[in-house]
Length: 203
Ligand code: SF4
Image (cartoon, rainbow, N blue to C red; front, side):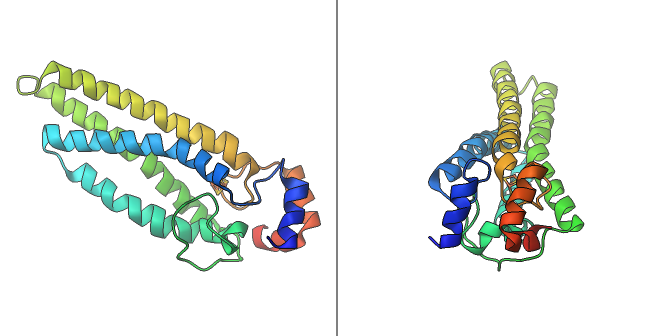
């Protein structure tokens, strides 16, 4: 590990996640994976039970484009830690590190993409539930009950992901120009005074 990182870790290990590590990665995945899993189950059931496949197709196209290509370009490539590795993501590093902080277009694009990721599965599931209810003669009551439970679970896990991301990871994230970053101004100033090279990247 470079000496500079050692110094950063010593001084800021309590306040900032300066270093990639498995624990951080596992925390992130434990917040994200349950939501992604139940969303996918809901959309697959929607296709099997109602024959509507436009949502699962849209979701399947959106996920790799957003998480593998677009988000790393507009968000992750500006993170100081992206110089060395991915930040808290297990996906491959495919873009060059970008010294410049995220601009407004990138911040808004990221929030729109994240919003789509959070809203699409629930919207699709509600449409699917409406379809099941409207076709009660064809579909069984138990399917409506199961689907309602899936919607409820998706909603809870959606909140679980956002709540934990926002309150546990964004509060000590070194990516200061990310729109969700919630590191206090005092900690940012303290960090930037000690390591001005990071200030250049994230002003
Ligand atoms: S501030 Fe939050 S959303 Fe932004 S890069 Fe850091 S952990 Fe991810």
